[in-house]
Each structure stands twice: as structure tokens, then as C-alpha cells.
Length: 121
Image 1 (tube, rainbow, N blue to C red):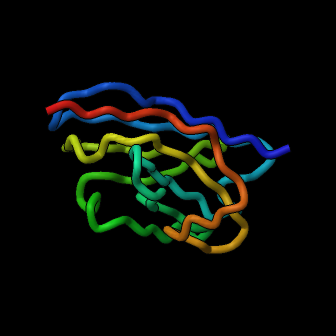
Image 2: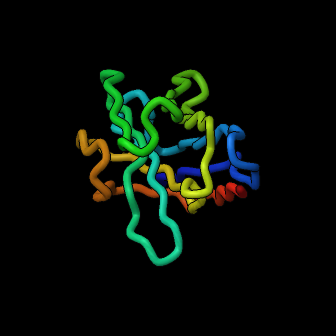
């Protein structure tokens, strides 16, 4: 059974920082392509950042230079360090895993339940 459990969301002011975590079980994060996605009300789910099994990373243009994806293989956990947060970053953030190198394509097989991030101006 694959489980992806996100945590670390919350409410912050514009310019603040948050670190999201995704604890994985049933998949080994170092062997999968792992991604972070977000979905705001009324909008489609969009890819934010991804890392493949070789450590290659991809970022949405809107978060480049502000967000960093990483993983801790020993803890089997994926992270998203978010800085310089803006109100437009407000969304539900989801962790995803797939054997295929999908990067920012929202067609991953496995998804977490999400964690809410709210940025106020």
C-alpha cells in the first residue's frame, strides 16, 4: 500500500517561508520521480517542482529561485522549501510519486491528500 502524507502547511504573511514534508511508505523516494503540485480554488492542478531518481529537478517558472525540492533518502521523505511566499502561492499542495519520469506532468499514479498553504498580503 502506497501512502504519501504531506505536512507543514499553514498560514503565513507575504514574504514568509514554509517547508512542506511528504512522508512516503510503499514507495522508495530515491527510486521514483517525486513531485509537488498545487491547486487553488477554481484552478487546475499545476506542477510546482519535481525530482527524478537521478536527482534532476524541474520547477515551474512561477517558483524558480523561491522554492527548492529535496529528499531525505534515509527518512524516505520529500521536502519543498518555500521562500518569498506570495498570495498567489495560496493553494492546496500535493505530493505525488510515479515510476515514470513525469516531472511536472500531473499524471502521477500516487497522490497524497494535500496540505493547505495560505499566504496573506
